[in-house]
Amino acid sequence: MTNSPVSRRDALRAAAVLGATAFVSGPEALAAASGPAAPPSRKTPALSPADRAAIDAAMGKKGAYNEAQATHLMALPRNDLTVRIKGEPVPISFGFGGWVAIKHTLDGKSAMLMSDTVLLQEEVNPLISAALAQGLEIGAIHNHFFYEEPRIFYMHISGMGTPAELARKFAVALKDSKLLPANQPAAPAASQAGNNATPAAGPPTGKELFDLAALDAVVQYKGVVNGPTYKYTVGRDDVQSLMMGTEMTAAIGLNSWAAFAGKQDDAHIAGDIAMLEHEVNPVIKTLRMHKLEVVAVHNHMLGDTPRMMFLHYYGRGPAAQLATGFRAALDQLGKGQAPHMSGMKGMKQG
Image (cartoon, rainbow, N blue to C red; front, side, top):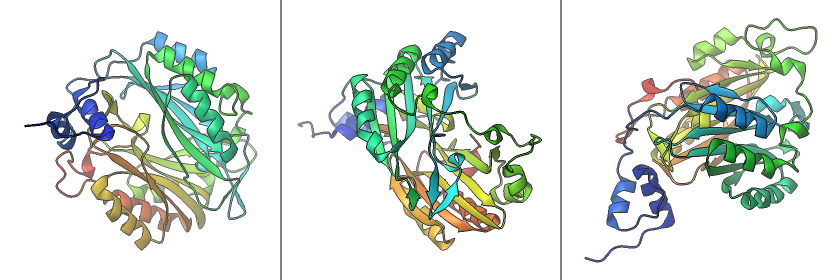
């Protein structure tokens, strides 16, 4: 019996399942790629304090370490931009901030960098060239919004190596861009306020603009205040997702989210739903039933197994009504007979 040809995607998926880095071919690879994702056999090793310090030093900014997910995460907001949607100003925290995250592979022999960068269209190709020059890879380039001015694109950059090496390469790739923290203006003071903060005189925060308790009751999670916005981030703990031997979790980008801007009776919502392939059209149908606009459907990662898709959406109206649409979309996840699913009850906030 002769071996059947295997596509690069099939090989990457098989390698992720097996935790391998070498090219895998033949029917065995296809079987591994098409079967259910095996639960990680061990916990992701923690990043050491020295690893985290090296990441912060390379980036010139202090990140946040998620101990439960063994992931060091750093926000990369575009505070230099002024963005409008349909002519109306919206805050950067509504969805115009990027991030970079680093965590170890499950075997602890390497680490993965994953990022989402926020770019003007003329910034896309210079950053592609800079990232490739550092040995990093491009996983996706796409929109997250309609109607925004200026036009904004999002590029996912990834890489494998040691934590310090990855942070250094990423920082070098960003050095001539507005994305590097040193090249960014300071965030408005209001954006530092949390749910329990007592705001100083100045622009209202999400705590004053929205009925947080009412929204939490609809969404069935607690959100986080970030300046004038209120945001939910919900992980997919019901899915065991691997990419190049690394467990993909909410802190490194496998999550659904919803951000609210405006005010309780006249709000904007924007967000992202993380889906398995068979969940895509049920989510689309549900969002349209709730009069939310579907903006984009695409990948964020390469070589992940099971294959994850991401849907971006937008809406305008009373915040409670918009929240109902987001909750309804979440309710479409974890249904069906997919072997790697155990239901939405396994999901948790990232």
